[in-house]
Length: 86
Image (cartoon, rainbow, N blue to C red; front, side):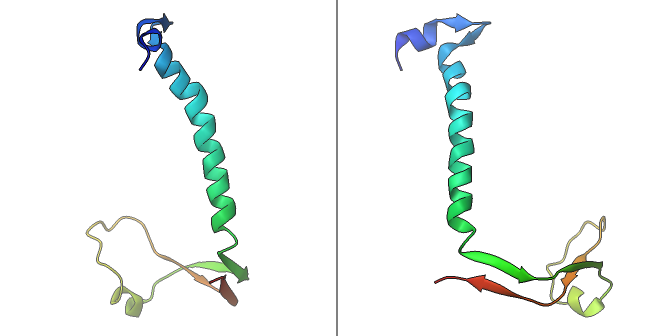
């Protein structure tokens, strides 16, 4: 790394760290948007979903056991199709 980026400071913060924040964060934001545009068309849900709090003991038998009893389970009911491209 160039000596200038390590030795010079603004508000007590090295220039290299300023560049990482000022260039890195917007770059990560743009990359996240591009990844979303690539993945979204591959898998999508079409239809209506209705969230409902679930109290079905038969589903508990196939779920991974959780040692924490906090919270509740929600099942999404409705008609629809998972659309995926291959």
